[in-house]
Image (cartoon, rainbow, N blue to C red):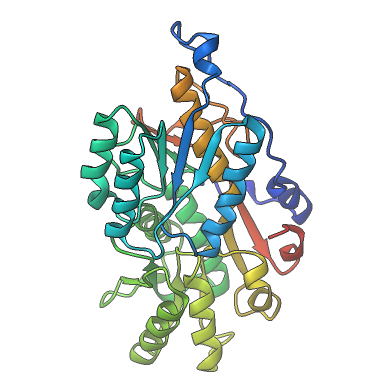
Length: 347
């Protein structure tokens, strides 16, 4: 998720993010099998996010509803009340009992979902995932971009703020979250190659925020007090950088300690404008929700998932398999948010 080479101006980024969700287009040749009657079937597709209240997944539901509107299919989002793998598995179990046609999941913990997703597939239900590149019991996983490259891009933002030197650490929502850890790993690998004067904190190279802003704040505050030489924290969860920025401000360390990571534009306008965070990176979860539903429909229609796959929404129109994989599809859906363009995104 390619970054330094693709830095664009605010206008093009705003255009890239504009949620002009089009109807699902084929993009790949159909297999010999599907008949027109099969493609006209009123499928039921359920999208299962990590939780139902996180603003990120509230935004995702916008894209899910748009896909339902565009296709006329019974497509909806249903998630647990909090980010909990056991609760998410129960939601999936309920959907299996309801005999839905497809389940699209953003897994809290891929390992914890293997059994229930296998049950779904054994029941003939199409299963796709997003942010679950390590998931075994899924037909395909969608990533908005290459995870290692995206992590490298977050690191570029952190390195620029840190003056390309000093001690830093990495923060993930959960150590079980596949994508967050792949971003963090990609960032660390890129640092070692591109920024030799930066050093990963040996004592605590990776910490958890539990996908919670308050926890990110508390963890960052403890780290900054415990390690006075700590100069940067690379975040991954959308709650990490805002929580870290709050700790930096409270401890009077603005301008001395840096953070970078993902974050929603409107929710983070203040910290971008006041300089607590110089830039955030992101992909539009609404588009990811749309893309998951679109992929599920393609599979149900019998379309071949091969070559370049068009899921009918910007950033996901030229999906290609990750190197060495026949399961993980990568797009080019990343964006950059800064003080100059934060008002241009619409969410």
